[in-house]
Length: 341
Image (cartoon, rainbow, N blue to C red; front, side):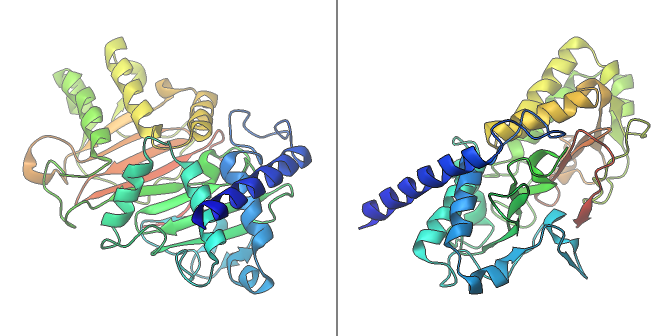
């Protein structure tokens, strides 16, 4: 029976996908980043299928106008935090049918690099006390899939991802995202055992090891900013740490490897859009790298908190007391931030 349901769902997705591709936007809309997801991308196709399957009662709970605002979260579509639920119903609940739960899973799976899919499942299981995927995550839909603008948002502990078919002009990932992991305990050990994202920090620390004493003096900052401070400063911003443009070619090459690891967990289209946004604002050479000395777990000189920042690019990795990563990327620094830590 399960095999039959899966085949029915895949056939449905193919049908919806061909319609979405025709209605859309076969080429990228004016003003939108060209290297980006489209309405006919895999996740966006599943979003359309999910929306079409919803009852009126379901839509009243999880579907909102594009510019829907709330008192506590402002423009709800753009909000991001480290532990929140965009709507009340959990995915794995009787609010959704089994087919709808499978469609939501298709959306989620399409947003991540297939090699990272098992690691995201581990993160979500660890961070929900062993619950299965979907048991402690929620979703919302903004706008109307199939029209010009729509966005799907999935949230939970250490988890905010989006699918928007490039509806949100200028912004990578459809808006700010969040990922994190507390693999074994809230307060992790210096080597962060089992943490799926900690290798990103180890690779960044290799850059620090390559720096000369004067560069280390400049790159090491005394105090970490608040975790949700990832708004854009623009081209005239004062970015903390060491300007990438002053680094040697081998140091920059290692930092490019760090960037590749940062975007690796996500689908190729989002990776491409991040690179396009970064290039539009001067590339890595317009950014600065900072390590923070104040929250060094174990005082071992392996910096748990660090940040790569440019005019409209912020990737803020906090490994203390466990991993929280705040990401805000666009091709225009005028894009506002709506975040709460």
